[in-house]
Length: 397
Image (cartoon, rainbow, N blue to C red; front, top):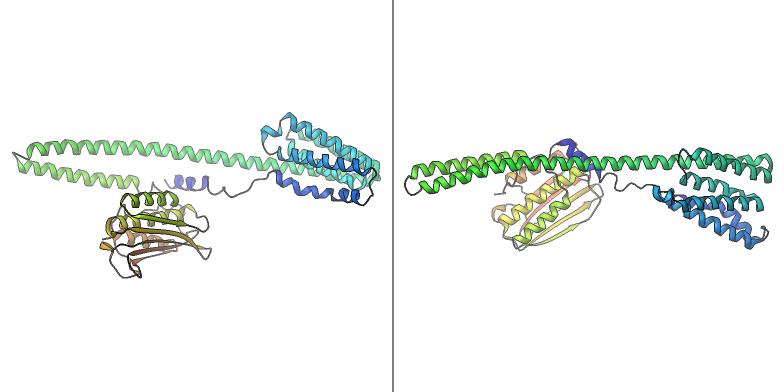
């Protein structure tokens, strides 16, 4: 159970905020062409209109190839390959015509090539681009132009290596999430089968004994009473077995618990007000706060006689999160001084939150009603694979 909850908690949430490379990652490198752009405006480039048109064409093709290189379908499309070939021709034409700063377009060509081409085609294509850059650079700058050839080859290979590694990581994430999803589905199927068998047997026994008690009630009260005692024993045993089956299995998200709380409050004729803000929480912290919501709202429905219940989840100082459940009822079985914690359910939660580095207080509000306040670190300590469990449906009174 523990490994399943741990996997389910991390499969989709842990990597949700991590950013993978995309086309925008390659755009800042266009700043390498600022030297050529400066030459155009300073009048150092012959036929500046042709140079400007070439610069615009190069940038357009570079952006097009960059944004189509991060999905396999578009990267391997004919249009992308044609655009990369045109990019190579434009680069050679500008470098041969102007030299100088215009030679720096070759490393940019290498970046686009590394993004758009993968093994096994990468080696020959990268070699061709490097040799082409070296030949044109040597033509203009002598043997010093080999630096451009080396920079072009390096940019091609390094870009391809980084993006290939990124794709491999992304594929591993996808596979991990799929395995976790299937594991959850299989566990749910197993649990539903077990619960069906358990309840099917128990309810059948209860129905049979109830019919027997009804038949015996008129003529044999003692026998009917014995059947009723059996029904009570079977019911208690079933409740115990269901608790054992459910305990440690269920660790829903805080959002799910808040949705259920709203539904339960509305069904009881109580107006729910739910507010949530602050940083994202780890699954263990969400599970603990979810139990607090479940217990507190159950008490509001059963004991408070309230017309309105407010649930607020908010960050506290950036490192802690606070949950407050407030009602405007008379308190009923929840009576007690502010800050007091009464009832088996809330006492169990107090111990659980204390172990995780948090606190729980409950008692009458400053004006009216009852207030339950739980505070935890954003990453509750000491929970790891530990099973999160409290009394199921434990009343406060």
